[in-house]
Amino acid sequence: MTYVITQPCVDVKDGACVDVCPVDCIEGGEQDRQLFIDPERCVDCDLCLTVCPVDAIYPEDEVPQEWEHFTRINADYFTDREADAS
Image (cartoon, rainbow, N blue to C red):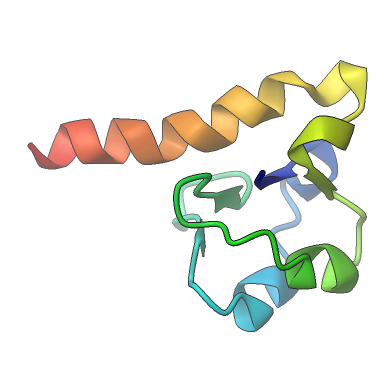
């Protein structure tokens, strides 16, 4: 399982989650409106969830229905970067 960053992060990007992630799986550039969790690198430790000041992070199987599309948005961020690097 992985964690997913959802709507409340958009235009906030606090970054506390990045600071506590032991595997550096949370990324997002200056041009991005939110941060993203790489589902391939996430080790399901839940540290990011505990420090998020806007409650934007959920376990993949608990993402609220209205934000389920963020699961794909997070995964696509990393897939698209890999494709651009090739």
